[in-house]
Length: 312
Image 1 (cartoon, one colour):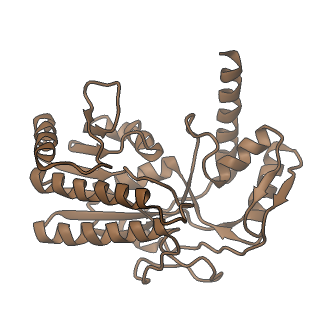
Image 2 (cartoon, rainbow, N blue to C red):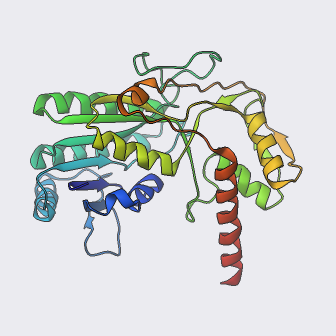
């Protein structure tokens, strides 16, 4: 894709996966990073309040690196995670600074498109078993993480309409995949990490609970497809079907031919099912879980990483 793609939050897992994909090789990648060893990156902590002159300086640096007519801003940067349930002032202020600074820089650079990675899991109810939530469903955030994502969606939507900038909001389901920096992050990763180390899997919801998972690789592809198809609006990004936690445990046992010990912390039901038909109808793309293939790949990476650390 021949475009300037400005990455905000280069160090995030999803950003790293996106940048390293083949479809980014033709793009002019401009990275905004809080800290980087690469001179080509623009160093800026957008999680802190930027003074007007700082905003002008950063926007000037971005403009100097622009080589193509089309410029796309992608907001990967975010503080905290889906399990952030406490209303921490630090988390709130950091994420609001991120969005506000992002908007100020967008106002000066005027990208042709903005892409914001939101969260499906944080914005839809989790206790209705037989209903796939579409994008038209009124969001119902259940914690501060979801409230921050929803507020950011609204701020970016309002701003984009005023300046007539195309906006793509991707509501991502539960992400998984290997990253050497965070080898045990996310449900699937944590369980495979525990399985590799012969530890008990901690089960925080009932085995009947259903979760929609999507791999880092599929998320990267969904971003590229949304850019290629110039999608505007909100889109659920997930796999074709959710899977129960009980089925996931069984799949891990069958894949690696070993009995998995489970520690059931509580038995709360959680049903996370989303409707992906809007993305499918406009792009023709359907993401399948390909669970066994992904389990083997992540497990192998975890083992290799553990072996490498032992040899250091």
